[in-house]
Image (cartoon, rainbow, N blue to C red; front, side):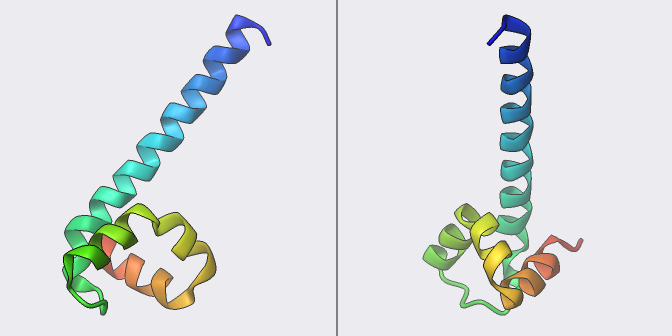
Length: 70
């Protein structure tokens, strides 16, 4: 792999990490708008694992969108 390809891969990884963290941040601060139990551990678990839950759970997708609304 050339140096240029490595830099492209690094930029993609940084971009994906930024997107992941941005959505986790928005979800964390919008968590009170969801129908989930408002416990700290729920907030932490759902904020960290949001991509997994978003892919596999319809109810989570609805709540996730609700949490991201301003």
